[in-house]
Amino acid sequence: MSELRSLLLILCVAAVVAGVGAIQEVDQISLWILAFVDQLPPFAWLKPYQLPPPANSEYGFRPISVLMLKLYIYFFGAKALPPLWVLFLKAWLSASLLGFASWRWLRIQGMQKPALPVACMTILLSPHLFGLWSLAELDGLGAASILGVSILLAKPDRVYVENLSLGILIAFSALLKESSALLLFAIMAAEVWISVRKKENWKPRLYWLGVSVFIWLVWASPLIFGLKSNVGAAPWQLRIPLVGFTAWQLLFFASVPGVCLLLSSVVKRPWLPTILGVSLFFLPPMVWINHYETIYFSPLWIGVVFSILLYGALFYIAFGPKQRPKQAGVALRILAAKGALITALLLSSSPREDLATRIFLPVAPMLMALIMHRNKGYVSRWDRYAARFLWISCCWFWIGNGINGVIERRAREPLHRKGLVSLVEEPMEKGMVLFNNFAYRLGPESLQTLRPDASVPDIV
Image (cartoon, rainbow, N blue to C red):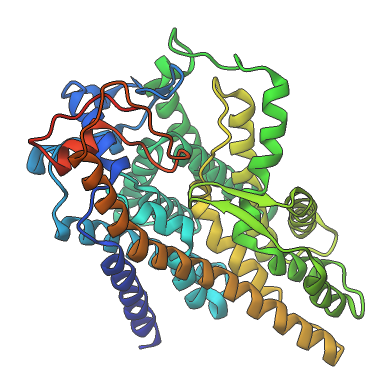
């Protein structure tokens, strides 16, 4: 009965965030993507494709994403506003599946106590909400399928239906987008490593990993090995700073109080939680430039210092002398996922600074639950109070950022749409340049949807 109540709560939270976000509006990113996908040949989803400007001659390989958008265009068209029920259904399914997968995964890992609150807070994370409310963004579904693969791989004996489901989830995750494929293979590799450390039967997991990677490499070979590949073309002096920048994207999911909790659970010294808790009041005001895609920390040293502490704590939990097997396995999966994306950044043909935080959604519940699960064992009364304060601060950080995302959605989008309508109604000259701080792309697709009868010039 408690499991049924947990599932109902997850469905209700998903319905609330889907209802809040499903506003009849012009989604500039989705309209731009739909217009581009509509121009692709019918079977272009079967192979890599060249991305439109402002991409720098990049190629993408997202068969499932393109196929799903092609099906949407077939039924609803590429130039009309998405129906309200479609936006709601997409958001509700994505949020529900991510919440349920997070809850189930954490329970299997022996983290029953934080499983339900972490699942609900994962749905409310602002990077997740950003993609959730955009028709063309499918990171929530990808994260849910990756967690589903990990759940099924953890079962020692699988029946036929479970093996079939595992194959479907692997195919969906690997072919959804490039980043989801990287995270999938990294976590599957971590599953093999964990089974070896536990002296379990690791060969079936290695078989699934090997076959999946082989099929993906063969299918994506024109992108990786062919003439379309430009791997390693960017200079190293450009890549190295981006590695550090990419590393601190997990710091947003952990939060500064969460890093303090992890550190105090690793370095068990009297009064350390109290000292870390009090030190939060002396930190300079933190500002992060956040368009719910990528997090930029300011001042810079906060992002650097706390990222070093975060990864140091994770390495100790995963490989330290006093390992707890389940917690070590969770930390190992997080490190494997991060390592795969950093490796891809080093080899990418065009490393980008704006690596989306929502890419790391599959490891967000792992990291959040690990912080909450290790929050115990303090001897001093003041340390217990300090740990409780840090724990409450973590939860408020996660929930508060979700509330900020909801407020922004309700307050900004109607004004934004009204401004675009006014822009279309005003006479404009051709060659007009608009600077919008890269928050979204103002293109003819968006403006013509607002006013199909208007003459829209080329806008940069």
